[in-house]
Image (cartoon, rainbow, N blue to C red; front, side, top):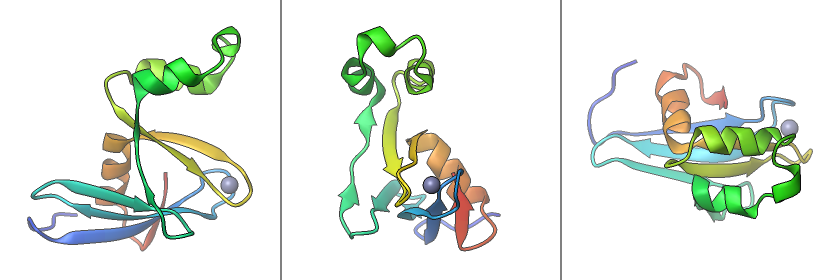
Length: 110
Ligand SMILES: [Zn+2]
């Protein structure tokens, strides 16, 4: 759905496993800005994929789907999202922006 520059769209990002809230997102196209706010109100900061990969256990990398995901997205900024049920979801900034831009309702599963 097209929207004008300068307009801020807000969406609730929902857990793909259980559908509960992961973060409140605010996205502006021009100038580009994405802000994710956790349920407790804190602003969430993305981590570079390279840094994230270095944090994962080297021995477990081959079986860890998170490591595979991060390896496929080196060069991107990645958000580590967690719902109240403890599901951990990794999503790159461009993926989140795409979900926000294509969402039709107030909430969107990431
Ligand atoms: Zn969940």
